[in-house]
Image (cartoon, rainbow, N blue to C red; front, side, top):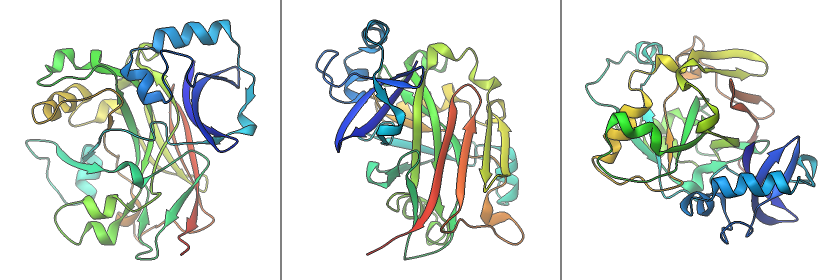
Length: 283
C-alpha cells in the first residue's frame, strides 16, 4: 500500500493507492483530514485496515497529485552528502552535516510542473530520497532513529544555482516557488527492509544524470535524525531530504540546466518514480 495526497474536484484529500485505485481516507480515520494529521494521530494501522475492507474506487486518472506532505512543520535538507557530489563541487567532507531548510510553499507535486523562475534560468535538478517522520522527539539516539520514521518518498530538490551562490547560505536558491517536487507517494518504512540497498536515479529527458546507492550517504539517516534532534524536536509529518549524488547540472561541462518542455524523473527502487515537466513562471 502507498499513501498519497491529492486533489479531487478541487478538494484536497489523502488516501491509499491499492491496485491502481485510491481509497479516500479523508476524515475516515480518527477524523484526520490530511496525511500529516493521520501520522500525528498514529492512524497508519487503522488506515491500512480500512483500505483492506474498503477497496478503492477513485482512479488515478481522475486526481491531481499534491506534494506528499503539503503542510509539513519543517523540511530539513542536507547538502554535500555523497562523496562524488562533494568532489564535483570542490568541497571537502565536513565534520558535521550541511543542513538547510525549505519552506512548504516551495513545493510542487508529481506530474505537476517545476517552475523556472523569471529571476534566473539556472534551474538545476537534485534527485534525493525523502524521509517522513512518524514519532517525534528530541535528543534521539542514532540506534533508535529508524523507529521514528513512518515512510519514504522521492524528492527533486531543484535549485536556482545563481541565487544559491549569492551568499554562503543555501536558503534563497532552495526556496523558489514550485521547485521542490515531493512524491508521488509514501512507502511505509516497515515495507523497506534496508534503505541502504535502494538505488536512486535521476533522468533528464530519458538520459541518466545521477545514479547512486543510499549506502553511499556520508551521513546516514540515523545520524542525520539524531543530529537535527539535538537542536529541535522532530514532529510527526516533518520531512528530511537526505542529499543528492554527483552529476548535478551546474558542474557539467557545459552546464546543463532544466528548461521549459524538459521532463525530469527521480526514481528510487522499491519506492517509486517522481516525474515533472518544466514550465516558465508567468506573472
